[in-house]
Structures are given as C-alpha cells and as structure tokens.
Length: 447
Ligand SMILES: Cc1cc2nc3c(=O)[nH]c(=O)nc-3n(C[C@H](O)[C@H](O)[C@H](O)COP(=O)(O)O)c2cc1C
Ligand code: SF4
Image 1 (cartoon, rainbow, N blue to C red):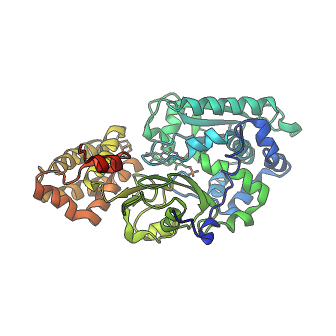
Image 2: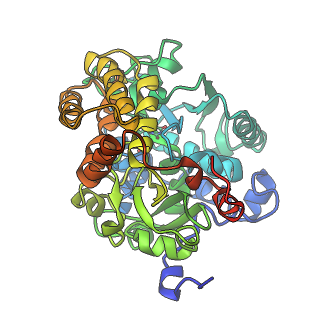
C-alpha cells in the first residue's frame, strides 16, 4: 500500500482528535493533564463581549451543516434584556453518513463541556443543554459522567473557579428523530412537545427555548471554542481557506480502505483524503460520493479536486454540509442508493407541511418502480417535477434535502435509470457492494 504524500499528511490537523489516543482520554484528570480546562481559566478573565469578538475574528462557521458564522450568532443575543439566556448544543446527529459528533463525544467529552462553559459565559447564559439522540446510551452515560466530573472540579455550578459566574448543564436524551436535529424542532422537543419545526421569525436568538434568547450550536462548533481561546483567532484563521477558516472532521465511510475520522484543514480535497485513507477499496474505482451527508447533492470522479470548503463545494453544485463523505464504488446501483435515502426521508418527514409529507411518499413510489424496472422514461420527469414542488416550498430543510440525491443522481446517471427500464430490473447485484464481496468472488457464490 502506498504511503500518503508528505504535503497531504501536513493537511491533517489533530486538534479535537489530538487526545484520542491517550488512555482514558475521556476522564477529567487525563484531560486536565493534556491542557484541558486551561482555556476556561483564560476565558473567565476576559469580558464576555471580547470573547464573542474573538470567535467572530477567528472566522469559525457552524459545523452542523449550514456554516453560519458562530461569533455573529452569539452576538445576536440581546443584552440587558432581563431574560434568561440559554445555550443548546445540537448533538442529535442523525443524517445518513454523518458520524463525527458521536465518536467525538465518546472520545473527548470534556472538550465539549469546556466549550459549553466558555460559550455560555460569553452569551451570559446560566443554563446550558446538550441534546443527544437517546439511542446512543453509551455516549449519554459518558457525557453525564463528564458533566458530573466537571461539577465536582468546580468548573460547572455556582461561582465557577471563584469568578462569580454560575452555570448548570443538563444532558438531555431525545427519543431519536432526524427532525429533532433541526434547531427549532429540537427546541420544541426539549420543551416536551412533539419535535416539529417552528415558524421563523422570531429566530431562536430572540425567542428560542421557553421564548427566551437562545444560541443553538453544533457539537463540533462548540468543541472548537477552547482551542481558539488557547491559540488565538489568527491561528484558527490560518488553518483553513479565506472564507472557510479552521479545521474540521472529514468522516470517510463506505468503499474506502481505511474509513474513519480525518481531522484536516477545510479546503482539503477528496483526492487528498483518499490518499490518507488508502484509496477506494482495492480493485475498485470511485463512482459517486456525498460531500456532506445524504442531503447534499452527489458528486462524482470529476469532482475529486474540489476544495472541501463552503465555497468550493457550493461552486461544484453541492454543499459542504457535515463533511460526511460517503464513498460508493462502481458496484453500487445509484437508483437503489437514492431509493434507500428517499425511504429514510419519507420515514423521518414530520408531516407538518404538505410538500414534504406527501412529496416524499410519492418520490418513494416512483423510485421503487424504477428500481424494479417497472416505470417509464416519463417517471424521470415526474421525479424532477415532484422535487421541484418540494425544494423551496417545504417548511424546513428536511424537505429540500430529500430532493438532493434524486436531482443529482438523475443529472449524473440518467442512463443508469434508463438501463433499469431496458433490462426490466436492477442490473446490479447488491452482493458485490458488500464488505464480504471479495470472498464471494473467490468462491464464485452469488447472492
Ligand atoms: C432535518 C435537519 C436535521 C438537522 N440535524 C442536525 C444535527 O443533528 N446536528 C446539528 O448540529 N445540526 C443539525 N441541523 C442543522 C440545525 O438546524 C442548525 O443549523 C445547527 O444546529 C446550528 O449549529 P451550527 O451553527 O453550530 O452549525 C439539522 C437541520 C435539519 C433541517
Ligand atoms: S419539510 Fe418535512 S420535516 Fe420539515 S416541516 Fe415539512 S414535513 Fe416536517
């Protein structure tokens, strides 16, 4: 196996991952030994407004998908309004392919807790919530243990480190729904209601949790804060590209030799990431990939050199999203993959608005027919027409996201859809896409 080139290796930036290999990295004494809570001590000596300015200057943009500038979001919280302020960390992580926050919280929960305390202090919140999918019980326990340790050490609670600042942190387990990752549905769910998006305005910064000013940020956004406080805004800005500062997780999954989390400068390309990850699985070639989870339009081999930052991926017709790079080789039927994603969106549609509730149902019906070779060529126009009636007309971005795999797969693989009609069924054998496919090839077995 060839080794990654040196200039590619230099694009790796272990900041959030730097403690992962230390034994018991999730325990407070290990975290403290490795620089942990040093940023908090520094931050408590700084005026909250200056901290907000520091995060603005760093150019940190939200890591939950949309890339909204984090410092700017914090600055929207009205001051002197005599209302409680809240920080809510979005740890719902449910998008197909997205798998960065869960392993991060398992490996390094105190970096998130430290970020929560600094961010809460900056926006003058005395209560913070971490909203986690309830199914990941092991992560829930680890986070709860980390918060308990932080209370015992005096980093959370009353008069933190003698600063006069008070903060309580609640780790909340949601029931497990993709829509509860949408920030306003998350707030409804946290208040005990069914998780459905709210009408905006008012935005959460003005009327969020319990109708009070609230910042909702992704886990990785908040966890990036201690390193910025420790190293300064210029250090962070120097890591990424001009408009997409810093480093981030790139989660490689699927048909790749070494899947996993690659923490690198924004602007790295998939070609470079594949170099680090040992390439597409042996004996196969790249067919299509998602740059940021299933709701970001598919890209192909032609996009290997697109800089993976907000601007670069946007210019290529997709979105950086959560940097969830799902890699599919030539054994995968794009119609089948698109059908699976669309079934997910139909299942997860909260039902509040008609374009998404009805539209995702009909998308699945048409795609199922096509995958089984039963449709007609007109069905492709029907799919595009349905997508056109969802995109921009749905109440929240779940509906928009559902159209991404469909429109992009038709754009790049129209002939493959038509092949299903010509052959009266799917021309692919799904067994060849599985992890045990090489063994099947040796024994000559077929699924
Ligand atoms: C259907 C749907 C699911 C989402 N799921 C998540 C999620 O699991 N985690 C997350 O941080 N953001 C998620 N988002 C984006 C949030 O609405 C919001 O933009 C984000 O939490 C803001 O944090 P950031 O500015 O730090 O990125 C989702 C959005 C939609 C429409
Ligand atoms: S787009 Fe879908 S998930 Fe969003 S509000 Fe409408 S029905 Fe609910």
